[in-house]
Image (tube, rainbow, N blue to C red; front, side):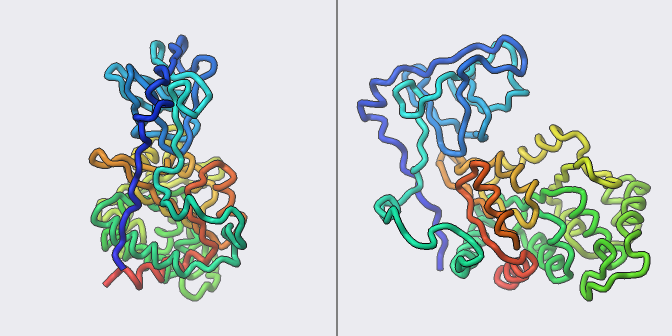
Length: 363
């Protein structure tokens, strides 16, 4: 089947409610990092603000951040920590246009969906859900996005604990289905451990056999990496020829690894400053048209909170596709509890998923 993006239907701004609405009000920042009272906080959906008589879309947005009016009457959306004295922060907490603020959640909804039944069995997503159609949709989506989009992957270490999954993910990188790779210290450490020792957390990545003194392997890997000073030098020194990090380096795919308090080592590439990590992650999320998160609850929530339901590309509004996939039903539903509602959840083994993706996408 041929993949086609959902079309976006703009609001009809000729309606009286929009024509008669006042300009959005704003307050001026008086102290760096502090928003004025009654600031407006953003959602994951398209939001429009009336500025000097025109309805303006916030083209790059992030949930729980604040909109500011720029000198050229556009809308920037920034974290509170980025607010500067003099910034004009839009204030008001209505969303129905009457105060110059309009939240528009249904721009990609078809008429059939709008008229669907309010009550239906198994409308949620759980381990009882059939995901066959989701797999097929994902294959077609990735084929489309390889040519037209920016695909961001967020991986936990479960993606490298099995040889088949690790090889499959590397194959997807080699074949252009990955534009940026995000994760933490563990996923990269164990991938590189497999490249040097053939193990992940001391278990052989194919037989799952625990190797004698294998619990030293990830520490030895970290020590080698820190001695080398960079991932690139480590790969050269240890003659690593396979794996996810090797494929990223070989194909110039950006890697962003956010550190955590529990990290050992960590790898030289890991961001120790949480806000530097956030900035680096968001630099890719801002470009993302599809995000796929595998088996990492905390990094999935972090990226999910940065990812809106839409993106403006070449002047057109298009949807952002967001997948979260885990063997745990609790883990995939956690993101929905955080407000990131525009997400497709799949309860499955991510190792099997990666092998299926590679089988269906890589010639």
